[in-house]
View 1: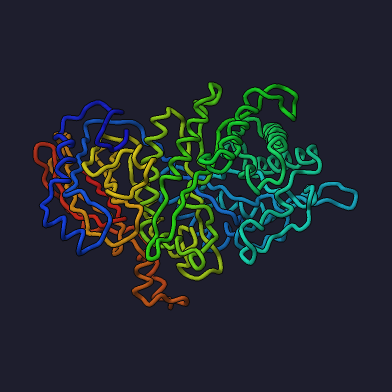
View 2 (view 1 turned 135 degrees about the horizontal axis):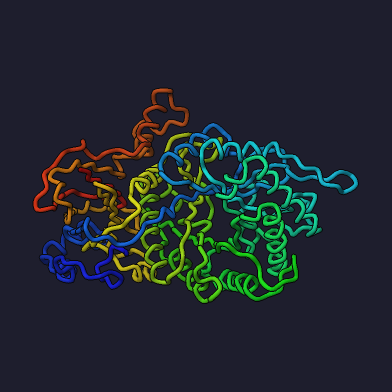
Length: 585
């Protein structure tokens, strides 16, 4: 399934011996080794002339678009002009539905947004404690989803002020305060679980009536966010009770709803792992708080793996191993339950680090978010997550990228976002590349690839991972190639030898297109710096930035001849670069 040299998970492919290629990496002239170490001072190695071989006639397995999930804290950004624009771009980049998850759908407030805050004011009470429902702000959010043709992954949270056991203080003041100070009245359990249940029922019933059964049956639903940390100011047992009452209410309003949880943090640490295990145990074997029966309804399982980049005095070093190790441990926990080992898994927030709303101003390690590295890291994680899901034999449904856009912020301030002030960042073009892939993988090997177990254990700190995913459609093949390393430092480009073999007999000539993301292509950040880093760009400058933010070709499309069903391509790929090669006939 994965593009690895040690292809133990696939039948043997008739190709040249890549073990020999591995050995040849180290048979470099001593003088060259001395030059690299003494003059360039880079503590990294590079595989000479990595070779990638792809076989159109050797199918591998289905490639489901698990990357089509996105999320953000601030739901009121949804209907801002740039929010609408970005939702349309996400929908247009993919031929299958995109799912959107947001926090604060039930939070009390006037609908004004700020970093890590949003509100809808859907629930208040009169002086007698009777509920008052107001759907106006909520409808603006979901109407925008509907108009953009995206699907909600509806997060049931947070606690309305009138239902909170600790209502004051309620609205936080981030970023004036620390991230740990945001857990105010909205994070507490309900003061009445029956009232909460009726509120959730009316919430779901309203959406069903407004958008119709056919539409809402395609949505996903989940209960709360990260109840193992400050987002839930109750006990684990109180969260299980909240889950049971919420699920009962959702299914009462919409019997065909697909609902899950617990959306805990990444189970790389024991606290998160134990919470996830306890939740699955509750859903499998313990008494349901809402109906008194044994067990709870669970359509999918979700948790949030994160990486840990660090600032190394002059550059960012990504922490991919932490994220992948949390994913592997989470998969193992799910697989340990006979009741749940085939239940779909959604990585509800899968990101290089934890705080999307923390800019690079005080967190220089977040500078990676502006350039190509964010996109290349995303592809590197995706490829290894697919390998881990295959290895642990779990059912991966989706991977949520917790990034959207922030209103009223400086251009390229280093927030984790897909676009800045309506200008697309390079990471969005990585998702555009993914959207060009077919849904059937074909065999691919790379002499520059690292085994998944090595990346999980050590990250990518010595040799880069020069790797590929290949897919096919009717009369077309697509190859996504990347050159990833944890350290974002200058390094010579890698010369790539790409061989595409096994083409059908009628593919005498193919139309070749080569898309690229690097420092010079599909990179609005580079264009913005070249323009002098304007914070108030002119209209013409803005249009140029918009254009630079689109996915670009490395060179013009060209028709080339095949030889015995094969073509051979040679090109260079910079460190942290991405190439999407597409051949059609």
